[in-house]
Length: 176
Image (cartoon, rainbow, N blue to C red):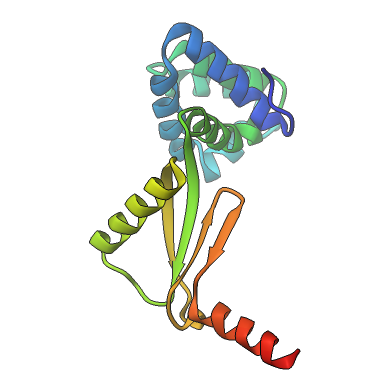
């Protein structure tokens, strides 16, 4: 089943299918994360530089990725050949998102008015997982303008139980 959308997601879907058939989904994910860090900034720009002969760029990429899985090396070679190496970071991100989505993991952002402890974060995530029935990979943020409470975004659902939201609602009710 192909995903609709960007080229990066289509490459990620193809890579996921290879990983599924070869039972290397996790190994490919780990390789992508390593290479996403290694092939950033100046290195990626050098590999994309048309002033450097393709043969030399390919040799450098082959040497740097010799220990990576064959599927990853083939992907990088294809991207290099098609002058699409700039897509690699997005492909890596799309792959991780795809694996998590297939595993039933959803992303969540929890914004609180003040910093909360690691224990409080874990407890909040546990409660959200129980109520939603899904595994949640949460990121936390602080927004002092919320005054108190929290704003929780899980997938496309937003729950705003902040004191600011309650005061805004009260203001709307009093104004009407």
